[in-house]
Image (tube, rainbow, N blue to C red):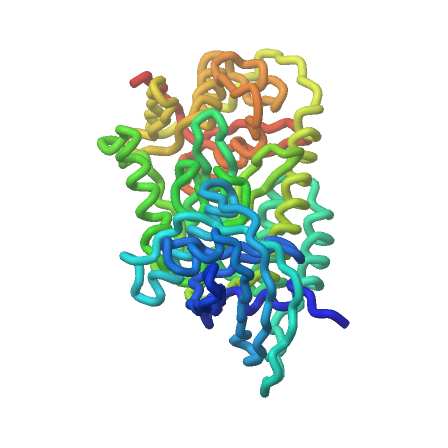
Length: 445
C-alpha cells in the first residue's frame, strides 16, 4: 500500500525539524533546516517562508524539491517529492502557520528571529520511507473517534441551550480528557466574543470578552479556522490581548467593567476552533493544557467535527426558542417584597448595568435586563418571551447573528453568580419569568 500524507502528520509538528533539499540552476545542491511544515490535505503541504535564502532562490528558479521528515514517535523518516505552487501572505492558512511558528520560536529561543513572511504551498508527489530502524508508536490514551461519537450522542439529548453548553463541557472532560475549556459566543455588532460557559477554572469568567482578531481565540474567530499552538508564546496570550484590546479601543479608563477572561496563567498548548452554522460564526470552542504539544492534528480534527455539530445544535435551539407564542399580558400583581432597596443603574452609552457601584453586564444583555426591570417596576410585568424581546426597540438587537437565547443564558448566569437578588427562570420554550427578592430603585447614569 502506498504511503499517504494523512498518516504522517505527527512528523509535521515541528518537534524534529524537517530538511529541505534543492539545487541551483547549475545543479549545485543545497540542504537546509525547515521550521515548519503544515498539513493542508492529502496532496498538499505548506512550508514556512521566513527568509529569502538560498533555498527560496532555488525554489523560485524552478528547482525540484525534496523534503525529509522524521517522526518523533517512531524515528521513521520519509522522503517527499514536492512541486512549488504559490505563496500566501494572508488568510486562514497563513494565520494558522503564523501562530504555530510563534510557539515554535518561543520554545527554541528564536522569538526575535522567526517571523513568517509567507506560506509556500506545495503539491506532494511521491512519498517513500527511508530504510532504517524504528520503534513502535506509543498507544493513544484517548480513542478520539469514540470520544466524538459519544459526545455527539450526549449533546443530541439536550432540549435547551444551557443543557447543550454544560453537556459539551462535561463531555470534553469525561470523553476527551480535556479539563480546561471555554465556550465563547460571537457578538457580531460589537466585533467581540463573550464567554458563555467554561470548565476547569477557579472563576467561570461568564461575560468576559475578547476582541475578534486578538489572541488565539480572536484570530480563530476572524479567520474562521482552527488555530493550534503547541508551545507557550506571549505573542498569543489572550490575557494580554484582551487588555490591549480595551486600551486600543479607548476604553482604558473603564477597565472596571472588564470581567477577567478565565484561563491558565501558563498555557503551553492552545487550540481554538470556530463554531459555525450555515457559514455564520456562532462562536469559538477553546481548550488548553499546561503540557507542551498536548493537542495534535487528530485532536484538532475531532474538535472541528464536534464544533460543526455544536453550531447546528445552537442554531436549532435558537429557532425553537423563537417559535414560542407571546402570552397576552394582563396587569400582573407583583408579590409584596421588603428589605433595603437595590439600586440598579443603567448607562445608555454602552448599555452597562451596575448593581450599586458594582458592574454586572453590558451590551445587548445589559439592554435586555434594563428593559425587563423597567417593565417590572413600571408595569408589574414578570412574564416575558424571546419573541417580545425581538420586537422591543429598547433592546436594539442586531439584524443578524443576534444569538438572543445565548444572551439570556449569559444574563441568567451573571445574575446567579453575583447573587443579585434578581432571577430569570425558564418557564417553557421561548418563555421566562423575572423575579426579585428585594425592592428595586432604577436610575439612569
